[in-house]
Image (cartoon, rainbow, N blue to C red; front, side, top):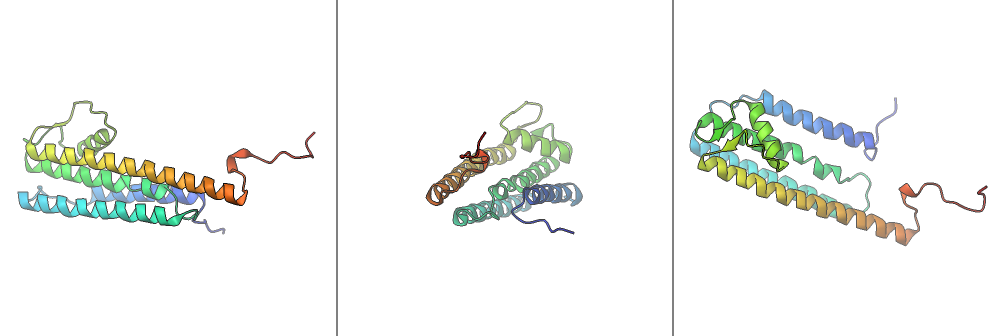
Length: 187
């Protein structure tokens, strides 16, 4: 049986789907209780947010150090979206469970996940919306964090593409999209 190489596109698909599945399993599988006391929610949010910031920083540094190394792909940064979405969905769910006055429309974990994705996509259908101060603060933090992460993703992807193009220019390697080189053997 052939082993799947880490620089294979299939490896990227499998690891990204595995990360998504693990995050969803965590989100739907771990008992979250009644939301806890207010200080517990704040502590959870602060620790989780610091953890997400560390994860983003770690991946961005890894990308910037990688240069042209094929085993480090931009998709590893894109894979950060799953934990970010799950983190904010848990925060919204706990807020909604703790106080019905925080959100209009969040009654289940799926509602919280839906609201998180809609907020990330800046769609805002209006069917679920924050009404309490804590919910509004968490939503603003998510929006700012999402904008920062998306900006970082674009910057890292651009830097990696520029680095790859410079390397090809310096080493005379053709682009993978150029197809076979035309030469004197053409008919």
